[in-house]
Image (tube, rainbow over the protein chains, first blue to last red):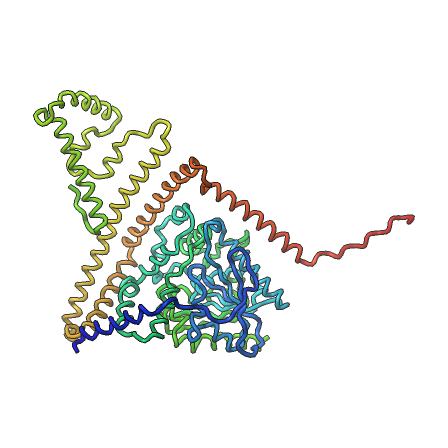
Length: 345
Length: 236
């Protein structure tokens, strides 16, 4: 059979198989909502192994995507791997903000919702400090929080988190420079669909064409197609962004780069990275098109902590959550690092 | 006539505009031609008066007779907003102006896309010439095309002109939405529906109350100073 005819046959088989796949399920690990505040929910995951004896780990994910990416399916779940290693995992779900949340400020998200989640965990476990894992935008939030409340964070892990927003490789940063974000948010929340388009526009040919051509060529296996559909569901499940918090995030971080310049104020207090004094593990992806390594790597030079480690993983932004390579490397690296810190006390 | 640059939506709009202008010019010619329009002698004095009035206001009264008419020229010809609907007229004029600007910028932005496509094709031609295996494998050729397209796109997307064009488009749309919101706000008031301003005001109050509640709850949780026991009143 010719190459073209073979491709056509494979494509038809994949399309037939795709038609048979119904709604895919995500976020299957057992968890309980232990605290809620407006649309924000704090989940605690059911342990899957004997406790490693570490302080609870709070995961602070980004607001621009849904956190179930960290528990996409049983064999592609960062959270599940952490649970198997005996970590007590909590997760903040920011929910789907709507028109009623358009006036909520970034300060309220970081010094309000995040702070109340931290306080709840500290009270529930009768401890003074917890471990914090901030991912992507959630990593930036976590850095701000750790700078403001250093005594409540025992160890901080940042994963694919931007710190310096104005590096030459940062395409998003270049694009938002010319956008009047105050005008954009004047008519309300920023639609998740708009964010989806922006993310697709970063690599349009790969993300809107090649991905689907590859799917039709290479996969007609049901399990693989379901994996693809779970990812597809997550990619386009972007919540609307609350107008005020979004405006402040874009202006203060992307346009003015206040975090590394030491010019950020939250709750009337300066957010200074030199006040991050807890041990920090910075995990970043070598081929990240959303948060290029150059945006994450500078963290070590700005924080006050004397205990700083960086871990580069040879994957892209999404691969950090779901790739086999990251799955084998990242959860053990996190737990071993936390154990070492615990032993050092 | 306007020449559409790129983008079928922009082209369609500009084509529709051209057709409209041509039709208007035809009507004006017929009005001014006594052979074609026996009533033209009656129309002309009115048209002359209009020209004088328009010129006195600094407007171009002959705008419809000008070839190569642009939408923004016509926007400038509108009568100044007057009367009891002045606010609505202003908003509508602004929306028309923004819509017109958006179409022009969109056409320019599509030109960026067309240039990227052309450069990607040139890169693909070079690669095909250097690698003969591409001609025998559609899959390999497709991969090569995606590589060329993505590299060419990235080069342009990181450039200042692309970012500026994207920003201008976004800002024009945002401004349009703000104007549209003003109209919707007014309509909601007239229909006795809750308007955005009213809902925002309520949300603000709820947020303030919630913040106050959090403050009180937080204070109540903090261990306060031990209270002294009340003294027994003397003599009892």
